[in-house]
Length: 232
Image (cartoon, rainbow, N blue to C red; front, side, top):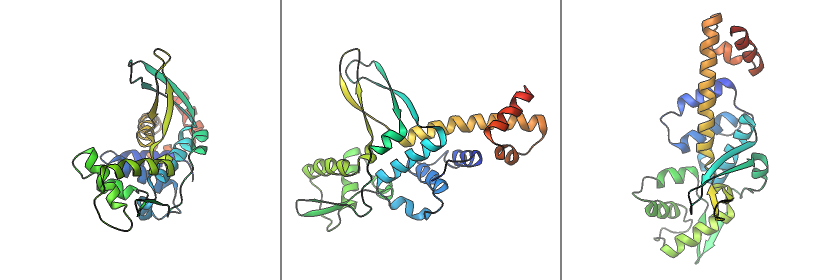
């Protein structure tokens, strides 16, 4: 995997404006993993996608993740600071062909393709049911509510990167809870901020020197910054 270049950042930001977060993540990974067949990226387990996207985010924007979450009891905003590489090291990836056995049935882990198709359901419960029924390897029987709860627990244990949670503690009221780290949204927010900064840089340097966008983006960050200092 390699970090995204300035031109790739802008292209991804432009292409992803009206795309679903799942599609944005797959577009980013297609750029970062040119050795992978683009059409096959959606067939990996969800945790693979999230872990690879976090790795790409760490390479492109740095390893430090600083954020905050609201305490579910008192509403106070609690900050957190996480090293992205250390977090990745705690998220083992399952085998591509991992299978969960329950009540005599077998289920594979959900993929991005399964997620996208299941989201067509009407409500969260229907989404969960549709997702698990798609992943039923040896049958198409309806999934019971008890099975849904058990399968979700087993899948999270087998593929923890699919739902990355950070342990939080409220210093105001003492509440403990798990905050969900949405890697896709986090990455997209950082990508948007970087893209807007790049566009501002291109605008200033193009006006000052008449250079085309491609030539400006091909400069190293240090050289772009040096030219911006000269422009004043």
